[in-house]
Length: 381
Image (cartoon, rainbow, N blue to C red; front, side, top):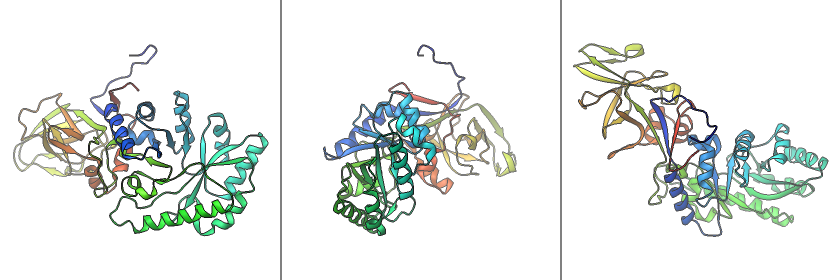
């Protein structure tokens, strides 16, 4: 333990983060790109649950040029940890953020004339020039200047003297599906807006459009840089996008058996008594639940014990869940069980857990709560 680091209580449930695998994944992604295309690592929401600071430190040794976060607080935490690489703030900013942009060398996305004008006034009052990335709404309709009105907003942007157009970007709404028609339509709209910018004498320093799905399946949209988030964790954004041989999962969720119960026929398990034993069963209790981010399901899902799948039974509660280990008679207190990840030849993916929750893998990854300790392999946080 490093000098001055405070000892924290342990817990028999945790998220294991393989930083060696992360670095290998990023190097494979970097090698898959043309040398001239830069690599931005999106590490918002604690790098999708992995821990933003240790992930950033590994990423900087593995081919990443810059980072993106969503909140200013996320970016400030990186700066406070000594991360000096460029940081792009996704989304839109408010006046609450402006001082932090200057003091911590953060680059905001700007997607409206109102915010651009506010930033212009702020920068002029301090006699500074702020780098910004221009967000162009090409059809996702969240943030950004509308591609439809490019000639109008471009002429007004050209009047600002204290904002430097360091980049221009858009975001795909559906880049990881087999049907690429809307993504290609968005790309065309983005390129048309860029032509309007060029005709007005505005030249963005860096043009970027691709998220993980776009990086994998839309090489014509790579432009100057791609933004990769979930893919760096070894998780593909969909079941149908292109694969890169060698990518491996970075996150594993584990717990140890803390109690065992012997059931007789007719015995129930858990709140609401949603499981009834039809025969003699042996039940293991794991100290992890929906309060830690596991989906709140009943009699659905599996865990891995000694390389074998064992079914969840009863309802997942806030701090515990139960699995039927009858078919693994050697199961014992302290045995390590995998709830997400690989054990032996078996694997439980974020996509499998997402199906239980009727959600997406991003939701699963970012919902592993802070009270689950992170244990880092291959590097120190």
